[in-house]
Image 1 (cartoon, one colour):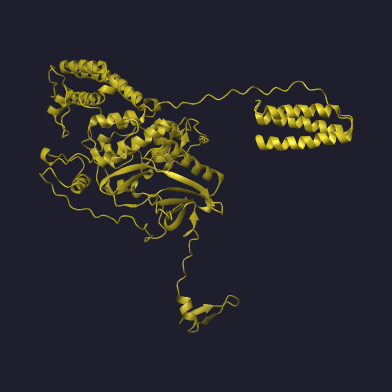
Image 2: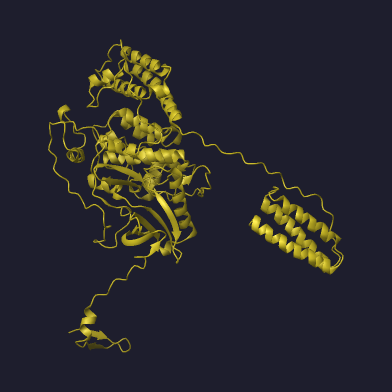
Length: 604
C-alpha cells in the first residue's frame, strides 16, 4: 500500500486509486532551454556531452546544412578570466591558420551572460583515449603521430603562439572516410602569445598547465617559449613508446620530479627502439630549454631521417569532438545524427599480392605486436596519398631526384640499402660490423636522402654535398669509436646548417608593414594666467585646466587632432578676455560643444 506524508502534521495516509499513478510516475527530466535555439547562424540540434568546464552541443546551419560544435561555459564558471581564455583561444587559433589545428569561427555571449564558441565538428577520439585503449605504440606509428603533431605545433610557434598545455587529451585523432586519420591540436585556452600581432591578447604569465607534461621552466614560473611545448612533446613521445609517463606520483611529486629527476630512456622499458629516437626523446626532456632541439621543424627533420614513419589507417571508432574531455550526461548520451556509425575491425590476413586492400593494411599495423619485424614480401604498401592531404606549410614536396644518384624505392631498410644510400660514386663501402658502425652508416644514409631531396633548394653550388662526401670518406676510414664520435660531431654541424637552409628557403616572405605617418608632438604654448578673482572666474579657469590635461592624456602627447587643439586654445584666450558673467557663460557653452567633439574623436 502506498502512503503519503502530511507536510504539516507528519502523519502518513494511504493514497487513493487516483493518486497512485501520479505518485509512481517518473519525474520528467528538465528540458535544455538551448535545444532548438539559434546562436548566430547555427541552430542547436542536440547535446553531445558535458563536463566540468561546460556543455557541448551539435549545431547545424539551417540553410546549407553545415554542422558545428558549440561549447557553452557553465554559468558558475562565468568570469572575466574564463571569458578571456576563450577569446585567447579563438584569436590564437585564427592567427595560426593551420589545418592541423581545430578551427574556431565564432564567439558570442548568451542573454544570461554565458560565453560560447562555435568550432568545427570532428569525428574521432582524443589521443589519450587511443593510448589508454592500445597501450604502447610501435615505433613507426609513434613517429607518424609525432610528425602529425609537430606540423601544426611548428606553425603555432612561427605565429608566436605557445600552447602551454600540450598533452594527449588536447590532441584529437580525426577519422576520415576512405583516408588515413589525421591529428589536430585543440584547446589553446591557456596559450601564450609571444609577440603582439593584430591586437592578440597577452596572458599574465601565470603558471598554468598539467603537472604530468609541464616543463621545468613552466613549473618555476620562468620564461615560457616553444621549448616548453617540445618538453611536453617529449613526455608524450615516451608515453607512446612505453605506455608510461616518465614520472609517477601526485601533483606535487610530479612537479618536483620534472625539475630534479632524470627521465628514463625509452629503450630501458621497451626493446627495439632505435638509438637515434631514444636520444631524441631524451633531448626533448632536457631540463635546460637551451639544450632541447632548436625548433619543432628540427625535430621533424630528425624524425624524417629515421625513415620509420608509418601512417595507421584506422585506430579509433569515431565519436564527436569534445567527448574526449567531457563526461557524458548519461551512459546513453545521444550521438550527433548524420555521423558515421562505429566501424568494426576486420581480421587481417597476410597477403603476398601487391594489391592488398587498404583497410587490411591499416588493421595489420594497428594490431600487430609492437616491434614485430616484417619480412620483405609481407611489407604493406606505402601510406596513401591522403596522408599528405594537408602538407606542412613550411616544407614543400621533395625536389626532383638527382639523376646521378637515384633514390631507391621505399622498402624495408637493410644494411645493404644503408650502404647504397650513403655511398657516393667511386667511394668505398662503409663498414657494418659493429653497432657504432651501423649507427653512423644509418645517419649518413638519412642525411644523404634528405640532402638529395632538397639539393636544388639549399645546395645549388654542391658545397653541402661535398662536405657530406668528406664525412663519408672519414667514416669509411674510421677504425675506433672515438673516430666515429668525431664524425658524428661534424655531422651535427652539417645537419644544423642543412635544417637552417631548409627553414630559410621555405620561410614565408616577411609581411610588408606600411610605415605609419609620423605624428608631431602636442605643442601647447605657454598660456597667460586666467583671472580667478570670483567664483565664476575660478570655475571657468579650473575647467579649462582640466580640459587641457584631458587633451594631453587622451592624445598621449601627440598632435593627433590639431583642429581640436587650436579650438581649445582659442577658447582659453576667449576666457582670459571675458569680463562679464554672460561672456563666461558663452565660453562654457562652447566648451560643452568642444568636449562632445573630443569624446567622439578620441574616446576615453
